[in-house]
Length: 136
Image (tube, rainbow, N blue to C red; front, side, top):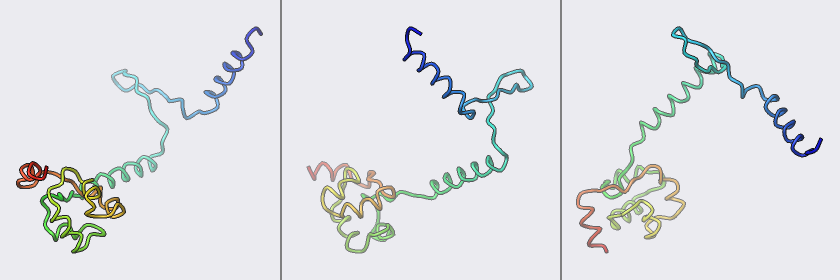
């Protein structure tokens, strides 16, 4: 052949696509004649996948973010790793423009922040915008 590298690439591509059958999908037609691809999955596998998805959605719905600009001391102390002293420091340093300000302003350590970052928000509390203007 005139181009051996090109022919080798074509052969390798053909082998690659033929070697992995899960890339291929079957096509079924529904009653109206529309084509729709289907996947080969067992009913138990599909049910397990759906139940895991439902569990994740349910767990995400349970989580209520704690607003660090408006939360009470008791609410802050419910966060993992936040005790009375840290809660007092968070309250004293208000308002926060973002939740990362807790670490930037050395209110809590980076390790403590990493453990609570998905549980907190720095939304507007009562008068937060005015306090941020005064803080600047």
